[in-house]
Length: 446
Ligand SMILES: NC(=O)c1ccc[n+]([C@@H]2O[C@H](COP(=O)([O-])OP(=O)(O)OC[C@H]3O[C@@H](n4cnc5c(N)ncnc54)[C@H](OP(=O)(O)O)[C@@H]3O)[C@@H](O)[C@H]2O)c1
Image 1 (cartoon, rainbow, N blue to C red):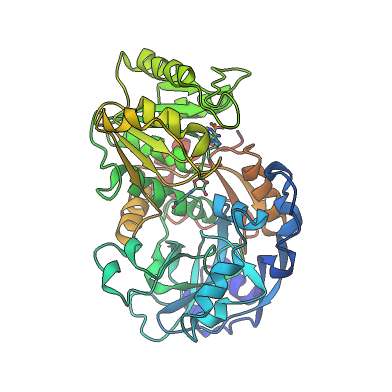
Image 2 (cartoon, helix red, strand yellow; image 1 turned 90 degrees about the horizontal axis):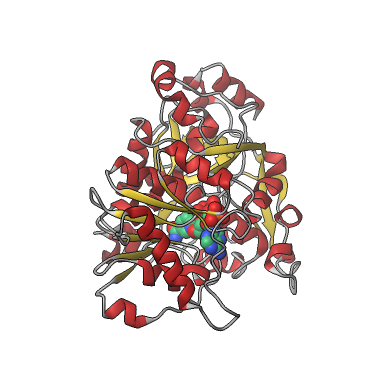
């Protein structure tokens, strides 16, 4: 592995194809025999530090249409939090089901799961049938793993019946020194970013792009008022940028003055602090079973106060159970609630009268197809959208990185250095970077 790293650091990328591929590599895993370790504990007490291991694993065999990538950096996504706390279910079921689909997929069904759905790195080897990429290419990952043997996936690959999120529903993910990936998951690394910056937008940037911008999602247009939950978090920090970049008007919901300050740094002006201490202290649920419509109305009134009397054309939803009733209520007549997640609980309830009488629509959105991810990555490469990396950990401390995200003590994205020995490496275009440095750094150290 050291020879591979030395070649990358010495910028001798042409050598990589001839260097031997290591038989083992370090990776972040969860173990199949530990999936019950948190049984009976409340969600908040399930600690990713206890379930995520950093260990040596054998390098998988490279198959047709695949690439083996030397991973310089990766990032924490909430899906790694879900995997590490075994909620809402253990991800070994995904690996077993995938393993039953073909002899090649059988490689993924192991007693350990190598997690991680983002990477920035360098291609080491490509399998038979790969023509668009070669050893030495600097890449980032699109985390959609599809088979495309069924007609359903051919208009929109997200509709493929064999669609999986790499590093969550497949093995050999990006929180590791090496990663196995299909070649149709590779995208060019933005030249002005360091490895850890380039690795951080991937999954959330593409998800927010489809959810908010794409015709498959809310199809946002200029002037739309967009209510964004968790506006300084993983998804929300990109949704906020897409709204601003696309001429829409974001109304950012956050839970602290520090997070509000970050939204202002991104250029947002309309911000709601939802927290009890410093902000509005909304209690949308009066008790376990009943929501409080008076609180929805108080929330709606706050939005109108900020917008000069307008309701959101689009609500960018992901907290789920806690907020969904308020989201359906707050959207404007004819507006759209677009949802991709249920962090606080997946059994949602809302007052359907506000939906049908006011002709609102709920749209389900999930990750992004290759085209959408490519467009989202292109916006990063062109300096229109910027990484929102706040903190970076070494691979050995991935558990702590995931704990930060689980405890919601992070901002934007939390990065992980895999092979890269330090932060700041991998920048190719220093001149372009200098023009965007303030925007690239606005989440750092907060
Ligand atoms: N379907 C997909 O393709 C897809 C893709 C990416 C992520 N996801 C899912 O989307 C969710 C968010 O991911 P993320 O990366 O954005 O996570 P994140 O970085 O933790 O950000 C989420 C933000 O949501 C806000 N939030 C959390 N609980 C809330 C609650 N009960 N009420 C209101 N706001 C709340 C928090 O912001 P404040 O505390 O500042 O309000 C938090 O920072 C996760 O469940 C993840 O699994 C789905």
